[in-house]
Length: 196
Image (cartoon, rainbow, N blue to C red):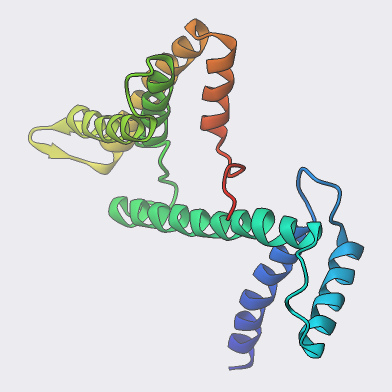
């Protein structure tokens, strides 16, 4: 019972610590630990005295409209990725399976890059469709005698992943520098556009 309470306490304290530290990091050096402590104490004194209708300071704007929405979105994206990874591992009954194993990540990256090079397509829809195509190709290649074993599927996924990675490299080679930067940024992922 004692160890469970410690585990639950750690599950609460660790994310809270990460959130507080994340609010002091980023592109701006304007908000540090000392500024965060100073702002928190002044906000508490405003709350206690009842003077909450004062104009918003720049630290308040940075914390509540820039940092916090990105931090919350990061937690949501992390939870979604962990859940989807857990589903993949449960389906394949293998703890080392990930989106790269089935070619999903590489296929989606090719779809997004193609949409950036040929701006007729929507980036998100193209990435989704190519990710599904990668899984279907992996499944069709791994099928032998109307059955698909897990080992065949993992090996087929690695082959498909390699093919899509080669296509992605080709798309990066033929694209102009601005589109190349967009492709690299999409494949790395970012949350910098999210503000409240």
